[in-house]
Length: 123
Image 1 (spheres, one colour):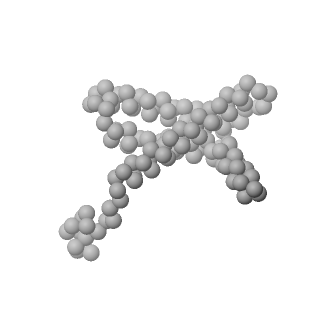
Image 2 (cartoon, one colour):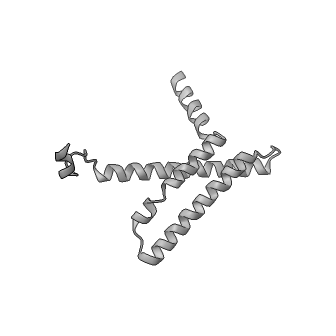
Image 3 (spheres, helix red, strand yellow):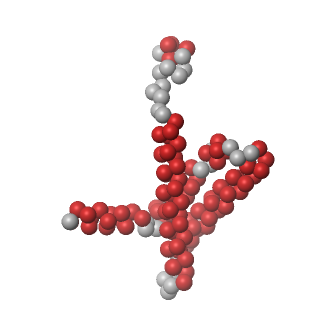
């Protein structure tokens, strides 16, 4: 253990930076897709005859505030110190959290994926 303490980078298995960056990008893009699907579903619910679910409406507002915060963070950090990805990388996990909260409150994507794989397995 003393060798690991003396040489901090030697004991940690190194993952390629491109692998980490691509997995973060894919996760964030999928999260934005989930959030967009929920915004469309919420819009359809408000224009239809279905009664609104209070918890789902709060989750939609939460996700909207997260997206506004991410855009504001990108604008402020980009205007003050230049467009560096490290500033957005510190808060982009909030988009994944917002997508998870939306799916936990009112599942849309998970049942759709299950139906898709059920059809594929029947063929």
